[in-house]
Length: 149
Image (cartoon, rainbow, N blue to C red; front, side, top):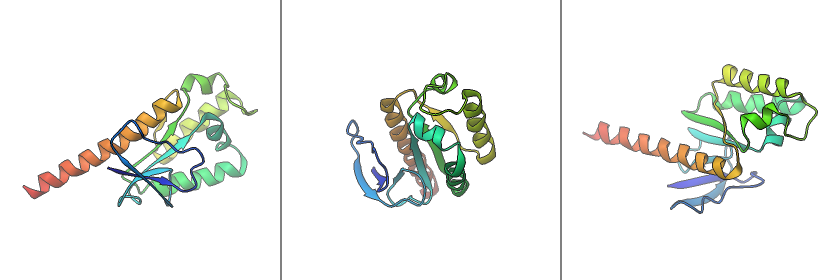
C-alpha cells in the first residue's frame, strides 16, 4: 500500500507502525490518499484548533468548498485528533462557543455527507487514517477479484 501525503500537510503522519510506503504529492483535496486513487479517496486530518478555525469566517468558506469537492469521492472523511467531549467542553483556542462548534460539525456532516471521526488523540487519528485507507483498498481488491471470477 502506498499512502500519498499532501505536500501542504503541516504535521504529517509517519505511518511507521505499518508496512506501507509513504510518498508526498499534491492532492486535489484532503491530506492523505492512496497512490493512483487520489481523485477517489482522501482523508482530511484536523487537530481541534484547526477544526474550530474551519467553522469561522473565510476559513469556513474554504472548508465548505473542500467538503463540496469531496462529495464526488468514494471515500472521504475528516479525522479529528480530539474527542467530541473536548469540543463540547470548549477545549480549543477559540472564542467560538462549544454549542456553535458542535452545531457546525453536525451541519457539515448532514450537508456534505462527510463523517467527522473524533478520535481522541493524534495517535488514534493516525491509526484511523491508516485503517480507513487500508479497508478501502481491501474492499476495492475484493471487488476486482469478484469481477475476475
